[in-house]
Image 1: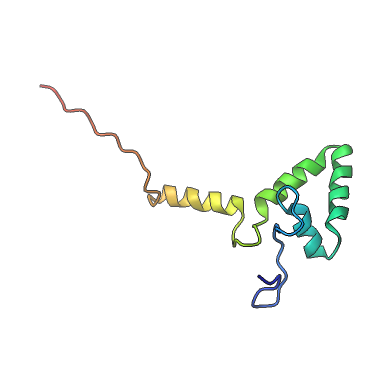
Image 2: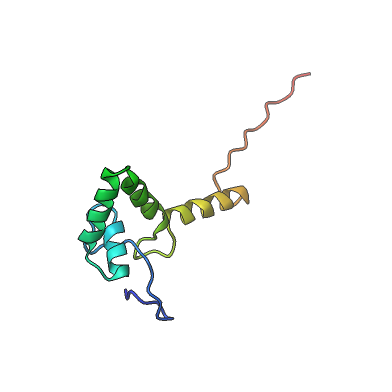
Length: 102
């Protein structure tokens, strides 16, 4: 799979190559054209000084799609919620009412 789409636009994706946990740092490094270890170091420093690195990584994991998918984890969850609300979930539970006694 190429890093460029049919319109020659680079996309931010979690990568498999160079992945240590979820591929966020390697994806950002590839997108920016820098070594993924620099991104990892920046997140480690951000974690040490205020703890923001963990949150940034988690947000990246939730919002960046995997390189072989078109949607992120959040987009998949939102789409599932919309399908369930529209009645397309297929797993709806409708208990039968007990027979009425006279």
